[in-house]
Figure 1: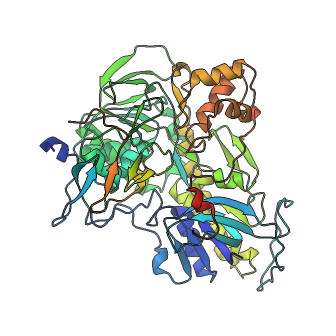
Figure 2: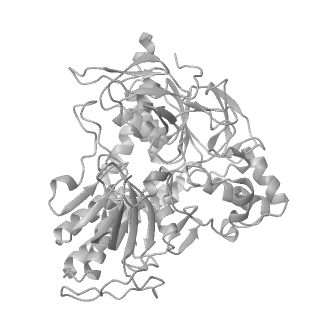
Figure 3: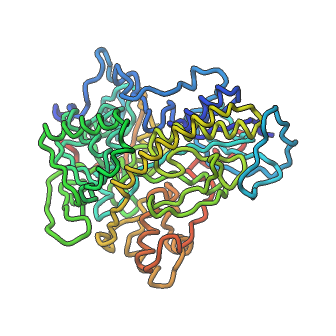
Length: 102
Length: 480
């Protein structure tokens, strides 16, 4: 993870310890209290899934209404990344990567 | 047989929290159901303690979990609301004046409502409520343009949530596209978090007529100070605020790399800005799905560009004992929502036979009227006026769930579809996971435009339960 990507996070409180989740087989750092969407975006990942027509999608409404940010969490498909809080050891599968924010 | 309760409040934002507080003051056992894990809704959303020492700018006006007499059911979706058809024993007045519904009730002999819930293990799946206060709030109004489904386009509400409550900058170089003061607030937060804001576009012309509203704005110092602070932050960062401009299309390979902007009404010079994130803040859309599904009468409000529930002076809908408070009944902001929540609780209390002091009713009505005057100013200055029909190329997606394009809609309209239901049946627009919350407005406005008719002539789509997706197992009355 590059330095600039890590900087998307605003400072965490002193003593806040990162945990690790697995995204598409890769270890990704996240902080308790973050949503899956936050963890993905903080890692620079902008594409959360692809539609049936192959169009990339990401977080859009951020409040559980639009169902664009769907990912698979611990084997359960169609989970809203914006409504799901990370847990240590959580496994997230996206619907294919895309260009990243550097 | 589901548990029978006196009052269900659905939504723990400003309106729902205020309703719960007022009900508790009157000794009514209310059940507060909310889809989020923590109360607050969008305005009073609290930052998780693990992410920041402070919970945010807006402390909860009322902590329902700390208050005996209020039962909170969190993380729970209400996917259905049905007038109960089974007969119930008549309501016994507990003293005080009786309530006469102002609507000739289309309601039922049962006199209560069946709530269908889906939440964590242990949460009830069904409740029967004698009174229901819907406080569903609102979501950002989707205003489609070519490229708006690309990663990097997100709503202003989403961006504000991320930067304030997830403490995350959702991009590096932003373009804000929409209308109204919320955009300035978002710009300030993004700048303070270290983001670069290329420009803030307001679809409306500069609101010169603002001075006419001096009387209604007088006294709203907290909001004026908020606006002033946002304006100063933008000036310091040299962020241009450009009136009468909108994003015409977003471009990029797999995510946003550029935005093409131009005058709102079309024509004029188009410019290209290199940005990686576009925030959409064209105001809010009331969440009317549950009230619609419960068969409350709704009317189209051209000023709000939305269908709103018809309510009497007690905020009661055409269904007796079913109230709607806050933005879900028309966008008025958090202060209108707070006072409407209180009024709805007073109304439900009267209907349950409680004695409600006349002075309290008068005080709540007085403050609600004052807040509504201010809300009317905002609606006048920043109307939901961005009609982007000209921008919708045939390949622009309108229904994000089912990937139905403007061209698909135009084709079925040309083939003779004249109602929303007909278009939905042929194209599936509005039948996806969001249940039309995103595309409902844009699709109906495009059809109206193609037919040269007002939106209200197209009829409304019939809302079907579940109004939000739940797993099949979640429909069962008892958890499997």
